Amino acid sequence: MIGWWLALWVAGCGGSEDPCDDPALTWHQAGEPFLDTWCTPCHSSAVTDQARLGAPVGNDYDTWSSVVPHASAIRDQLTTDPPRMPPAGGADPVEIERFVDWLDCGLPGGEAEPVAACDVARPVPGDVVADSGLCSVGTVAVAGNLEVSSEVDVSCVCRVGGALEVVGAGEIALSQLASVHGTVTVTGGTQMLRMPRLTSIGGLSSDADLELLDLQALKAVGGDLRVQGSALSRLSIDHVVTIGGTLHVSAAPSLEVIRVDRLERVAGDLILSQLPALQRWQTTHGLVEIGGRLEIDDAPALSHIDGLSALSTAGGDLVLTRTGARSIRGIDRLLHVPGDVRIEDHPALTELSAIADLATVDGDLVIRDLSQLATVDTFVFVTHVGGDLVIEGNDALKALPTFTTLERVGGDLVIRDNPLLPSAAVTELATSVTVKGAVVTE
Ligand code: HEC
Image (cartoon, rainbow, N blue to C red; front, side):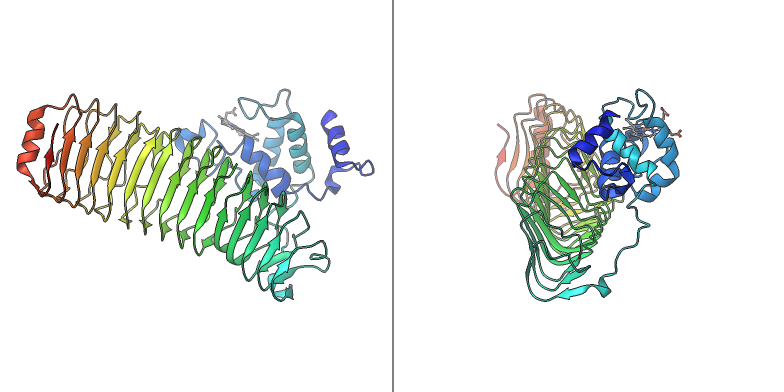
């Protein structure tokens, strides 16, 4: 009851008694955020095997329609004292009450709700700066650019023909927006941006204080997708298959989960860096192609580097540095890297069996500062390293990788500061391979 009182008091509307009259009691505002925080870490179709921590298979709450069949079981779990789910507790009673209201009101705002079709929308020519009158006459399609710089109602916009710029507007819900031809730019002070029906964009760039970015329906990204310096704890673009440019996520101190379940192709670089809280980087279908560089750098909480087992084409460097990975496996379809391969500074790494079929590296091949790694179970098929081959500073390394087929190193061969490595093995490699540059073993 206290929660109910609070809700009334916060809303400041003593008149209405029925929570079902609240227009904000929707899937996107009341259902999904609660489930995403408290339940989908285990109950999600994208979370499999051990990661479900025992949550029954098929008991998934990631979409409105997957919640519907479980609504009453969910209600039962939440209305005991204390609530039985989540198992470790923690959900706030006021939050639970609101979520249960949402269930009791019939799960409003779900996918079954009709959406106004954009072809009957009122066209608005030219560029538009959103003001309080924009949505006074129903659904609109903006032909040019749309700028949103204050918390006005923009829920009527179904299409933006140019770019969408959200500038420092705290909470914005573009709840009908289906497509943005140009780039979506989010800057300074925007905390929540909900675009739950957005399926296609030219690109996205966010360097804002974003705490929530809802892109759950997004399928197509024409250009770059950049999220830099945000306050997001989760980035989910789990329906996107292809990114026409670069995917760059960096300097987001609270980002814990990146979900790109269906992502197969990134035409440009794929860069994840400076993500101190990142625990999970989830691809279930598997990335097949990266047109540019692949870099995962400075992610000390990331204990597994996976989702790369289908990768067969990389257009640039392959850089895996400074993570908390205990093992790096997979990437076994990649035969050729046109840049450098760098595996450096993973203090917890005990297994390196990735890139097992790699045949040629045009740049440098570097294995450095892997303090716990004793053996390297890969690189058997490497015939050619175009740049330097460096194996350096690996405190526990007892044996060199089995370079059975290595013929030629185009740069220097540097093998040093591996205290447990027998010098005979180093000498043997240095004599069996043609090294164009210097041989450095001290
Ligand atoms: C840490 C993982 C985890 C989280 C988070 C979690 N669950 Fe569960 N859930 C489980 C496990 C394990 C079971 C099976 C054992 C049991 O029933 O206690 C389960 C069972 C259930 C069931 C019963 C399914 C059946 O047998 O009918 C429901 C309903 C449920 N959870 C709802 C929720 C809801 C709602 C939330 C969020 C408020 C949630 N769970 C959060 C792990 C989790």
